[in-house]
Structure formats: structure tokens, C-alpha cells
View 1 (cartoon, rainbow, N blue to C red):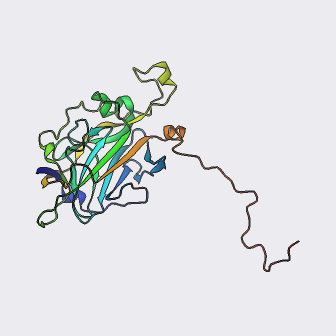
View 2: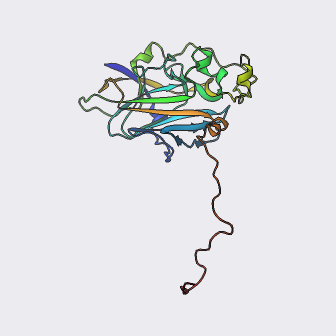
View 3: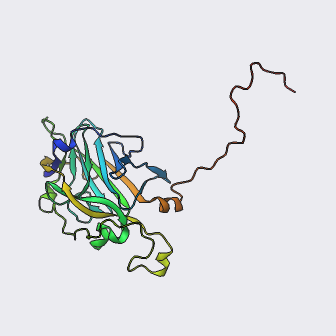
Length: 270
């Protein structure tokens, strides 16, 4: 059995707003733009979920357990585990959510009470790229596990896994003093002439240090494979529009518009 970290009730007790844009079945996942104070809409394209991020904006991954029992959520951003900072694997640490419970993951976990905020940024400034792992930038993953049946216990707040006890603070470099990078126009150092003609992909940075309290709890998984795997891809609005993920509506109605009640009685046909 492994111990998991759980989020303090002060941060996780209230239910989060969950519009239809949330993805997931056992639990719902939202991407919340903290700068704009809104949940980003999810676009479904060729069977995949996408959100458009705004460069420089901090964001939060919001989870809500829809089940009557506990769930373990192992979360990755850009192919990196959000707790340990290691290359992501669903056997790693995760947050445990009690029945119908919600929690917002605001950053890379640095300790039991601190995180480094997530923010959208150009790929070279992303945490994954700055730690030598740029290949999977642009994707958020949530692997959900049910708890192995055991004697009934009092519900505890959300939690993290035992693996995090020895690696809760990723050893990556802190975000540069220059602050969040604006959307890359192709002039970043190291980019070739061909790349300059193509907008840079969006990634997730290692931002400011802020409070996010968690503690440990025990959690034994009911299976070695996830009960559900939720994947959300993200990029800038411009890039998603260029890929056909976001489409501009095309007006198809005739002019003038039809009138629903043009007369009182039915005339004879011509």
C-alpha cells in the first residue's frame, strides 16, 4: 500500500463550478484561466479535447470526483508529473479526492505547502523544455484510479501519493526574473529560419511560488491500469485555428431573414 498526499479541507472543501466544457466521466477536469477568471472552453476535434491558452496567463487544473468513493488522480503536464517533477508515469504520486470532492491544482508541487504556479508560455520557456524534456509539451493528462475496497472509514480531504514524500520538490530551475513569456513570434534563440515562419507551440512555465497545503494519506489502487485516462491538448488560439480545431462560424442564413408570423390565415397555393 502506498501513502498519498491529500489537500487541506480549507482549499478543497467547496465544490467547483463545472460547465459542460469539463472533460471526464469518473471525474471532471477543467482548465481554469486565473487571469481571466473563467473556465476555458473545450473543443472536440477528431476525438480529442483541446483548450486554447493565453500566453502569460496563470491557469489551474480543476478536478471534481463524481463518484461515491475515493479516486486517485495522477496528473501530468507536458509529460511531467506535477508532484514529483519526474517524467510522467501513471504509477507515480497523485491527488486523492473523496466522494464528490473538488480540488484545483495550481502548479508544480515544491513541498507539502507550496507550489510553483502554472502559466501558459512559449515552448522554450516551458518547465519541460527547461529541464530537457520538450517532446511532450502541449498536453495535460489525468489518470484516475479507484480505491481497493476496504473497511469503511471517515471521509478525508483530497490527497497525494507516497512517491511524493521523497520527491515532492522538483529540482528544476526557477522561473526567470523576466516573468511570463509572451507568445513567441519566431525570434526565440535557437529557432531556425523555418521555425520562424511557424508560430511557436504553447507550453507550461514554472511560475511564482504560492501556498497550496497537502498532507499524506494511505491509498491502495484497485487496479494497476487507470480506470479512466483523460487527455486535454492545449495550444494558442492562433495555432488551434490554423490546425482546424477552432473554426470561425460561417453565416449561411439568407438576407432578409425569414419572418416566423407573416400573416393570419393560410392562403390558397398558386
